Length: 314
Image (cartoon, rainbow, N blue to C red; front, side):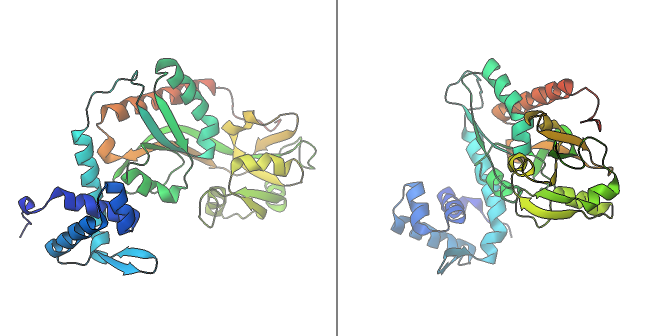
């Protein structure tokens, strides 16, 4: 039998949402502006209503029960929808108090972000952008909690509750110092697989995206060093005989007098960067406006990159 919503105090769900985020009665009470006894009382009322303890006290804080984990996603999504329904729907780019928070990958920060900031500064100089870097593993929680408005990068395998918009494609290329023994000519597949390489592996996965592509082709390269940021690569390869795979659209930021670029002798090494957002934000005027600006600068990027692909001449 469906639960009678008339019996549920909305504040109880606010308390539950805060507990899921903070994992602590004291922190949740502080964030909600409540006393700890008042929050504990509200939590006890919700426990009785749902016939579940919801949170168990442990040495590491309040741990949610299986029932709490089961209902957390739907309740959090419903709370965000209620918040957005009660917010003003009008959006004016000239509003000095309007700030968007974006999680942007290292790759997109180099390729797309400069164009976006230039564009926003020109058409809506009073709109602010807060840019942060987050591993893909953290994005669902950040998006669900409205801690970020959009995520931009190569973000595969997100749950269906998130929407996405393709922005640009990019292809892996080999990068090495100009004095590298393999520089100045096309690299053969045998040379590519035999040379020592630097792997860039953002996030917490065990295998880099480039290595997953190679594995799909039945290939394995010689990785001797691993870093987590693309921008660490040039300093390392400039002082070694390591080869690193970077994205072709990143190449212009590196000094061409110091580095040599050439194609990877493996097909299907292309990725697609996307903008990702929570479905509950889809129809918000401010989000629609921001997504239009991203689409505009993505088209600008495509127009600026209509030149032929990188040649082996580097």
